[in-house]
Image (cartoon, rainbow, N blue to C red):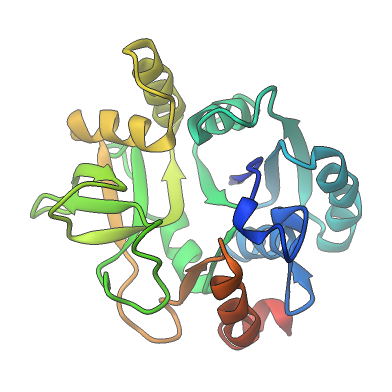
Length: 248
């Protein structure tokens, strides 16, 4: 299986720590390396990284990372990384045949989350999103989270930063089929901005957006969006413990 890691954004809230969010170290390991190694632990052998802000620096790091991990890493530079993140998904997905793990460069996960997600697909799903029902977790920034409303069978009915009510939070990891990039393109043609959530909502409206509940186990269900100095401090403290298979 391939993985697609979105690493194109500006990362404005981490600029005081690092000029490049994907290269921001977490206990000595850059976020983009954590992403590649976590994908590898889930069975991925090829990773497409969509770059944008500080693209040259990120791309210069990737060949050495590929050599150390044994993972094939392909860089796809976004033509305009200021556009919504769905454009990065479409650019990266164009380099992939078949299904793939979709990850954000600033999200880190306990290995069991991605391992389970990689095996969660079936023909009835155009995309499967890892979700967390612990919506009041101290690890979640409620002002930046993407929320999910679900039907009783776990299908997504609504997704976005401003929806209410909601049942869970989007963890930032997806098992995507080619339908996801197609849905984003369709949403753009229909006048939407081109965010990943626009494509997800379109698949949800078609009954094709499913979820995988990561559960509540303290160790196996740990994840974090490293988007600001507070989250970075948490990651520095906790990541070596929860990602012990990566840190060794």
